[in-house]
Image (cartoon, rainbow, N blue to C red; front, top):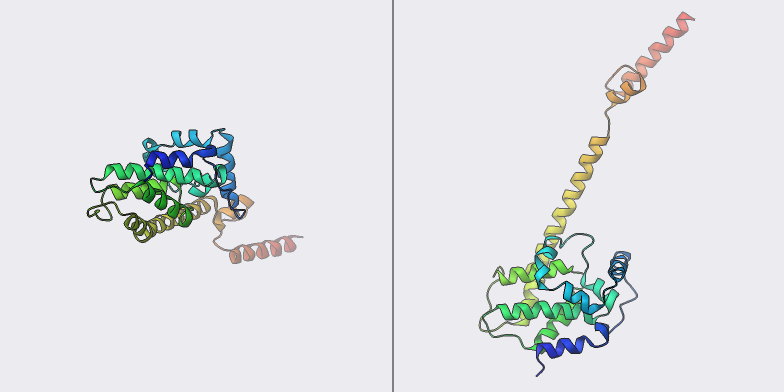
Length: 221
């Protein structure tokens, strides 16, 4: 049975670049991948820099538009890079729990399953999910760390929470846009003041004023 280090070494072959990304990739993902490549990090350096120690920072920025997704890593480095990143995170969770551990093949299977079904998650969202697992928010492991339980918690517990958070962020963004629009807008009285007209409340009142002014001017002439 392979140990975790052996599996990760196998994944690291050829610079952690195995399968090419799918041709159907969104412009946002492509832009993120290009920014990663511009850093001139190889996959091994990326995994070293983005180790578990920076998880709190990734969690804080989990919904930020610049936060890379698992798909971003695949596009930039190949499929084995996000799988290797996931395996390292799952290995850390494995060591954290006092239950019977997942073996290396189970960790690899779970990483591949997450990558296959949830590659739209950002790295911060994955770390947020695992933080909640460690905090016991979804329950406890009974006897052993079960990859099926983790997959179920991700799908049934975390994803609805993620959707709620994203909806709240979108509502907040729309509210700020409305407030900014209202701040930049002017009422009709202010429009009249800027044009040098009497500060009336409506266009009808302004038309009446202009008609009366025209009549006076005609009478005067």
